[in-house]
Structure formats: C-alpha cells, structure tokens
Length: 107
Image 1 (tube, one colour):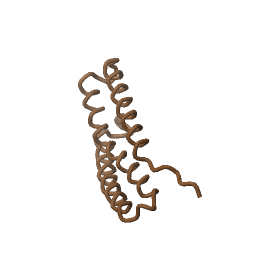
Image 2: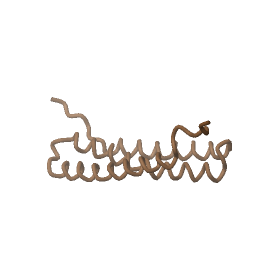
Image 3: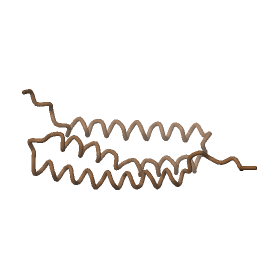
Image 4: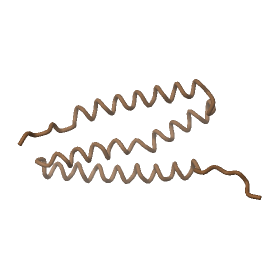
C-alpha cells in the first residue's frame, strides 16, 4: 500500500523560489540597464522594479520557514510574527514602488 505523502515538498518549493529569485535578479539588472540606455521607455523601469521585488521571494520563504520551524505551524506567535513581517515588507515595498514608479505620460 502507498504511504501518505505531501503533495508539495518544501525543499522543492524552496529550490524553485531560489531559482526564480536569481532569475528575477538577473532580469532586474538587465531591465535597469536597458532603462539607463533608453530612459524614454518607462516600461523598462516598471519591469525592473517588479523583477527587483520578486527577488525577495526566496529570502522571505527562508524567514517564513525559520519562524514556523522555531514556533511550530499551530503557534499563534508564529502567525503574528509572519503577519507582521509580511505587512512591513509589503508596506516598505509599496512605498518604494510608489516612489520610483514612473508617472504616466499624457499623449
């Protein structure tokens, strides 16, 4: 008989997020370099900002897992810590995006 197993392996998810974060970093650098060469194309800056935000996927996954490993999945403290962490990261990221996001040009 087959053993019950998880549908998703946390190690595979971590590896996938690590690869995606690395690719996002390369993409962000390429888009920012393209924007420096062609500043009249704000879509390059927008794409670079979004790719730079995606770089945080893997580090946030690691922090989330460290919190859950320390306190357990059923811990209210872990839930509150993760909630606070993601609110802070989301707010800081939102303010940074708003600060650097290019304004729409009217044609």
